Length: 495
Image: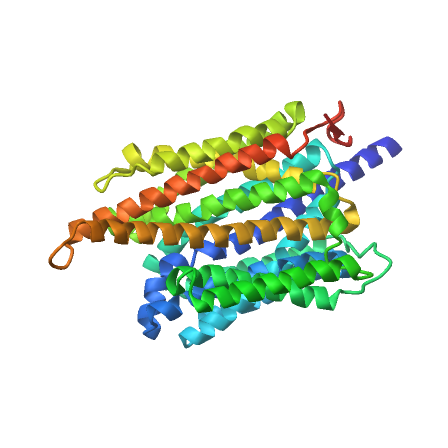
């Protein structure tokens, strides 16, 4: 009888663990979704508030600024003040900011509340990932949980494009924000019921304020400089000034961390070789991937003249492909470890990008786009799952939030750098093509379309090289780990 009760208790605990995973993955899905869902609604928002093109981009930029800038602070706060507490604070602020965005009466209000959404996400996302890290034991069980997390992180952007298209076309742009409200309320009440307290296990709760200010200020300035550089000019006085401020702030942050008694980011954490290697690999991968959704969306709508919904549906091949690899990767990792996957999967992503670098002006979806997108999805699913496991293996529990924040920061900074650089390359390539034609009048629509596609070609081609760099990092930096014979409860063994 006692054994039966113990077994029932264990089964209940396991069930609760998977409910926790579903809850946290849903919260992360909201954060990732909001990066892309608003893109399709931008023309409608611009029309509603008569916004200029330069002010409209701030709806996207402000979210990226606050999200990328506060991630390290959010991750460390989860370790210091309790993961559950920080997660609930983040999801509550995110829900309220989403409601305020939907009710906004001006473009300026939307921009401000988008900033609050990004701030909330920066606390919510690393707290959620760190709860997963301390809930599941290192080994096969955690690998399965992280595979779900990785699939959500890599597939949410594609689903966001589809959701944004449907909502904008059949409801109004406001529902792109309102949709977060009932989901957020559900997550809050469920979290209060099923999440453990996850109080801090540290002997102090001293937040390194100088480090927090320098890291947040430096990262926000860097992201801002990268986003604005293509329009301002990479060597303009404005761009160079912001880059200099970011470098000085981040250098000051490193000096502060080496001297502080309770640093925001203990520099010793980078001695964990796999964490450093995996974070660098993640930065390279997102540098190439963020541009895919940007270029491909423009190609489908501006060149092939797809509607917003048709564009969104076209992206569905990506999450389907991601699901195929993400659900199977944990079993492969259990047998061979994650290093071989990280050596091969980024090259699959590069293959998809190389395919897309040959898109014709009069292309078809299944003949020219889908093969490259499917390769991307297969490579993304395997890479994101494996790199998340690699970046968090061997990290002490009391620094799980910090490791999560660093990984998310690498993802956001990599995406911002890649998008800024590749957009600039594509724009310059298109302009150079038109200039080389030596036209005597204004270029025709056909010439503009050809020039635009030429620019995409160069952007995709350069992006494909980032996967090669990521594969080399996996080969020479990351050390393999395979599970013991009891993978559900064993610790990994370096091989």
